[in-house]
Length: 259
Length: 292
Image: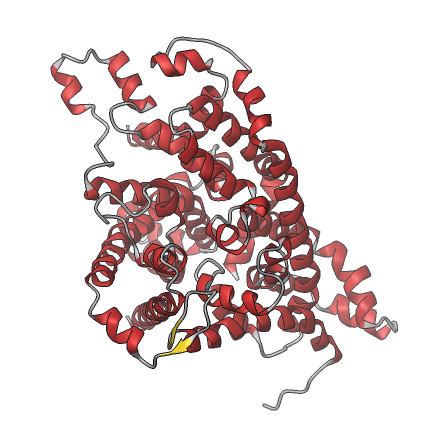
């Protein structure tokens, strides 16, 4: 009886969590006339909504957003990997990183705006990249990863005459693949999901998919099919990457929390 | 112990450079900005502490401070209790890994897309969920009166609860992972010892498991405090601070003042208040939980 209640609770939870996704996938294929007639429970199938996305400029935004988020993530990994290594080797800066972890960019909107206004970055897509070229979160996650690496390996490599660069690139890089993937996906997601930051720092032409989509809701609040189609396609890239690495991400993340 | 620098420490340089310019420097700058009367485009005029004086006398500021605290007061306990409950329920089930994977998904996927889906699904009166309910239960039946999506577009309390639900939906998976990771770290021998001593499952939970989960729960509390006090993107996407300012949390107040009314100096002063509030509360909680 108790285990039945337990399964029931889990089933309800799964349903509640999955419902917005299921609805999104369903509504994206609804014929527009059914939505306007309010007959959303009548079955219908149409690709009309997806066709309507192109004139709104969806595809360009998608490619552009994928580009800036990938670039920012790549840079964050490149700067984060040696930084985490330095922390693991005792550089006394862990507190600094943990402190910055507590203050996300969307919180520093006002001062960042001021700082960017002093440079030439404000209003250009680089405003979406340079401030994210180093991420305290990535550093912290990789640092946790390094702590689970048996350090004798590093010492042995050094005795064999390997320099720091070789140790990092040839010894540690392969061992840290799981953590790099996890840090990469999570930091990509964090960048991808910035809404107010790009809205404030760049003109409309350089808005990312997120900002554009938030705007689309204001423009066509009643066109659920169109909105859902945009939402579905905008979700798929990230969801696909996540599902591909899901096991690794959940396990690595869980593991790094134990330490 | 004296610190002896090693060559490996050089690796921190690029990361440190970026974070110093775009992380630490803005921190120092925000203090300076907060003493300016400045629209972002105009030349800044130093006004001393005038922004702070105005802030303390601004009813809109106090209102949003109250909303923020109310939001945190509802979100935090439910977040921690739900994380604990779900992690304990999932522990050792065949579907554990699968469900955890699903729970984590909302935190990653496209935020605006999620908001679109919530908005169309949960709109009062014309939302998809309401239509579905009307189809399942005839509108004139007595049951239908209970199956109404609350009018969160008119009632501030429901709007706030909607933002709470959205926030929980996004971060529950994270909370569950944290508790679950710590749950797996409990040595089985300790639980077995409790059982041998005749403890019921409930007692084992109360006297063995829960105390050992304490560090994980402290961690969640601190991270959750930072997160809830600073989160306002959900507000922007779902309610835009309304209705009647019922969901205008401090973060959103700052956004509005700074980038809709172009009063960056004033917004900077409010940012400082929010930062102090967050860091102060998080620190106090960490200390409090450690001492007990």
